[in-house]
Image (cartoon, rainbow over all chains, first blue to last red; front, side):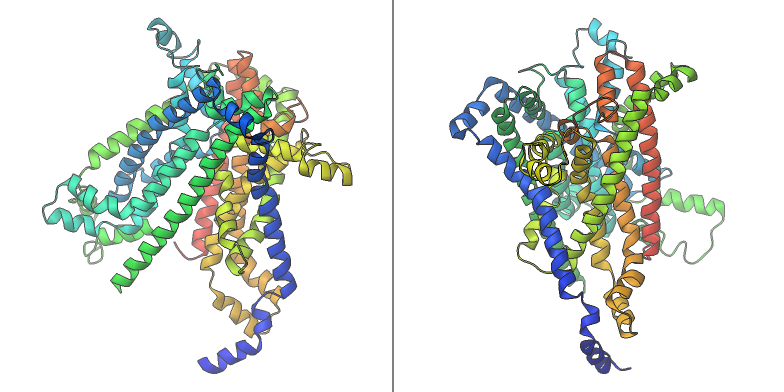
Amino acid sequence: MNAISATSFLASKKLTLSDPDWVRYALIVATLAVIGLFLLLPLLTVLIEAFAKGWDAYSASLSHPDALAAMRLTLLVAVVTVPLTTVFGVSAAWAIARFDFRGKSLLITLIDLPFSVSPVIAGLIYVLIFGAQGWLGSWASEHDIKILFAVPGIILATLFVTFPFVARELIPLMQEIGHEEEEAALSLGASGWQTFFKITLPNVKWGLLNGVLLCNARAMGEFGAVSVVSGHIRGLTNTLPLHIEVSYNEYDFVGSFAGASILAALAVVTLVFKTVLEWKQKQEAAKQAVEVH
Amino acid sequence: MAAISIKSTRHNGLTATVLPTFRQYKKITDMAQSNIMPGFRPAISFTLVYLALIVLIPLSAMLMKTFQLSLDEYWAILTNARVQASFRISFGAALIAAFVAGVFGFIIAWSLVRYNFPGKRLFDALIDLPFALPTAVAGIVLATIYEPRGWIGKLVMDSTGIQIAYKPLGITFALIFIGLPFVVRTIEPVLQEFDTAMEEAAASLGATRLQTFIKVILPNILPATITGVALAFARGVGEYGSVIFIAGNMPYISEIVPLLIITKLEQYDYAGATAIGLTMLLLSFLLLLLINGLQWWVRRRSGQL
């Protein structure tokens, strides 16, 4: 059968190639219903509940000293953890995507490990180390170093849960790009750092940003792990998610949802950036494909 | 696929021409490691040290703590009725939620890939919301919507008499929310790359649309769907923040394993918390292995290996 008769044959059979209209409509309606009820409605509910008693109650909740302290702590945790996780992700990706060594797949599995560990366990392990009966518990209390129920513990637990975020984004990307360009730069006399900053980094920048963004969202929003190690000391060790929990349990719904609205806004900004970054990545890949061919 | 292609370019001309002896092979791999790319030693050193400090040493602390227990003590903790009930609730709710998310996720992925409708891009971006929204926010919002006085909770309560929040059903609802993006994002790329020529072939040979779907499309999408369901299940078992607000947290009825661990910690029962935690960790490892196996199977089926 030649191409033209095949096309006309398929055109005559068009109905069997696409789904029947009623299936199409039913599935689209189901999709919109599930996304609307499960995803859009919760987002709107945050706003409605936060402003349930008006703007004044909302702004008063957010400018309460406890809320401000929680926001400051959340920012501090993100400022410390995101760069560390990023440096780790870049160095892990460099080692894994640019070199061959034994145990590489084991290393990749271990990097993924924190994804499959319950956040509560991520907190528990630090309690076991730094708690009163823990390995370093007595050493820490002798030297008057507060880790558990203090900011360092919160940072450690957040480092654990955000551990794979940047590495997971970079490793497949750098493997896909390959290292011909970097080798060319090196053989032309560029130093290792020059190659990294002028070749590698521009090539992976959108993927890297995406990883950093998701890492930041998780660092600011982590609840379970932080809840175990924080001790819930008001104004001192309550991050914004913990502040939301405490307010909610005290029936201060406006206060709770006002805090939640900040984190929900962060989530929306993250999603918008993520969509834009993925679009940029696709565009760049398409441009490169055109240049190659 | 990518890793293999890198290897083949790296050994280009060396492995292709002669079949190397072991000594030659070792020379080749040494060359691969001492290729002109710099910075292997500092990069791998930092990676391993950081991995050990943040992940491996803390996790081994849990192992050590559990080894301080005798086997009988460990067994007594695990066979405690309240502990067993919490495992049943966590794993049961996560399993049901993963299946529901699997069905919903399949429908959503199908609609987003195959159909055009207004606002499609917005809805597609919204799928990732449960990834980006902090679990505590998800928790209080879901509890507010599904509680007996909430928007949907009241509707369902009035029309069917079923209460969602503060019951095991509420846990399942929260876990569907959490699991949905795992399923959609696993199916979407497979569905996008699916070769429609196979559908055309089936149709031109006289298959009805339903036959084409069941015999041609479904077998190709099923592995990805199962992987997505497994990922949603693994996440659901350990989920804490989005669940505790809607669960009601009644021992034996709606108490999940992560909450029981926290309760034990608050009572300074470190041994109990650790034994339960380690058991959960081992079960997650098994799941992780299973998921890796599934993903390997998916890649092999789709001819990428």
